[in-house]
Length: 387
Picture (cartoon, rainbow, N blue to C red):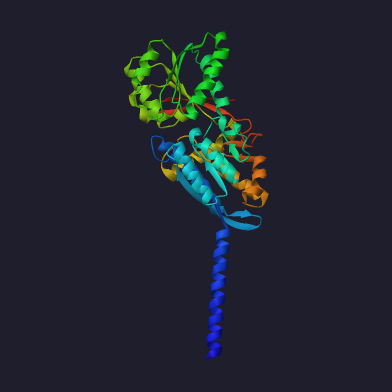
C-alpha cells in the first residue's frame, strides 16, 4: 500500500512539473505586439481601420505558423486606444512597456506617436508607425523609431507643387488644426509655396488656425472669404475637414479644398454630405504603389472588405505591412528579443502589399511615394502617384 501511495505521489508530482513546464513553454512561445490608435473619439473610424489592418496580419501569421529560430510562436496583438490624446498615449505606452511587448505598431497620429516614442526608446522596444507623418518623430534619432509611409517633408511640398502646377492655384488660404500633424503639414506646404510660388504667381493670402475638435469654423472662413482665395489648404483630419466644407458652401465660396492623408479617407463624402462637390477635394495619402504593385494592394483591399464588410479607410494596408515587417525582422534575426532583432529591422528589405520597405538612418521609409486623390460620386479616385 505504501509503494502504491509513493508511486501515485511521484506520478502526480511529475505531472505537475510537466504541466508547469508546458505552461512556461507556452508563455515563451508567445510574441506580444502592441498596437495603438484612436479607436474612440472623432477619428475612431480611422483608428479602427489601422487596428483592423494589424489584426489581419496577426491572423494570417498565426494561420501559417510563425517559425523563429526553429521554434513555433503565436503572435498576440495587445490593442490599445489612445483617443488621439497625447496624455492618454503615454499612459497606454507605459501599459505596453509593463506588459513587456516585443514591439509596437503605432501610434496613429503624430501628436500621440511622438511623446510615446520616448517611452519605447527607454525600454528598447522597436516601434513602427504606419500613419504618423511628422518629421519630428524620426528627428529625435531614437534607434527604435521607424515609419513605413512618407513624412510631411515629402507630403507638404508635393501637395504644394501639385496645387501650383496641376491646379494652377494662385490665391491660397491655409488653415491648420494646431496638432503636431496638422501644423507640420501646413508649415511644409506653406514653405514651398512661399519659396517657389512667385514663378507661377501663387501666394498665401490668409493663414488661419482651428483645433482638432472644432465644428464651427464660420469666423475663420469668413475671414478667408474676404481674401478671395481660389483654394483652401487644410492641415488636419476628416472630422474637421467635413464641416469646414459644408460651411464653405453655406458662406458661398465652394473653392478647391486640399489636404493630406488625415482628410483623405473614404468617410469624407459621408461626413461632408452635400457640402462637397465632385472634384472639389484634392488630397494625398502618404504612401502608394507603383503600377507593377497594384495587384497586391487590390487583393488586400478585397480581403479587407470581405472580412470587415467595409472599404479600407486609409492606412490599414500600411499597418498590416508594418506588423509583417516587424515579424520578418524577428525571423531573420532568429529571435523575437527586441535587442536582437532591432538591428535587423533597421536594415530590413521587405516586400509588402504597399511596396518595398526599407529604412534610412533616421528610420524613415526609403523612396516613399505619395498618391494624389479626388472624390467623385462619393468615391475616392486616384489621380496620380508621385514622389
